[in-house]
Image 1 (cartoon, rainbow, N blue to C red):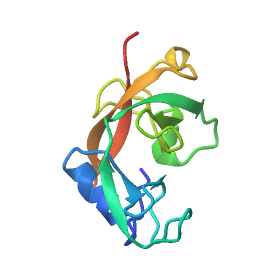
Image 2 (cartoon, rainbow, N blue to C red):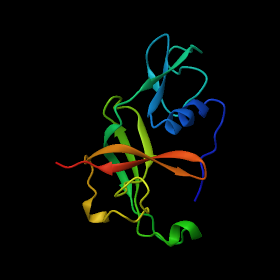
Image 3 (cartoon, helix red, strand yellow):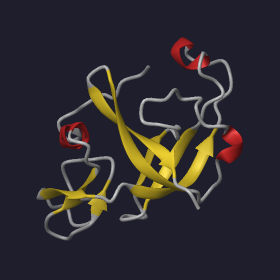
Image 4 (cartoon, helix red, strand yellow):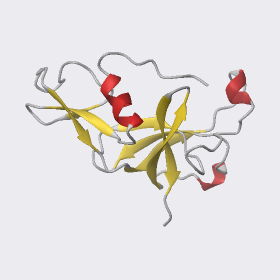
Length: 141
């Protein structure tokens, strides 16, 4: 699997996921949220930052089902999904990930026919090579 590249600006995001928390960087001056993390607010140019706790709920904003050729570690799990989730607490923030049946389930654990734009999801975390990675579980309803 591909592991995230953790840089100085994004390191707090991964520290929070290790604690089972989904947090998004925000500006401590103007209050605007931003993702991906970066040193300067694109709205007011402030360098003051804070990390706000999110509810972990969202909805599928978009998704794809990748087709071959795929990297070997992913090819064995096809067909799987790659989703963009719009956060309920911050609708302009969208996180990439996968919808799975359980936090530690394989990427192909959800039938692609169950995916819909707008479907409600909630975050779950699984550890991959020492990094707590957010994944998404379909909510009922």
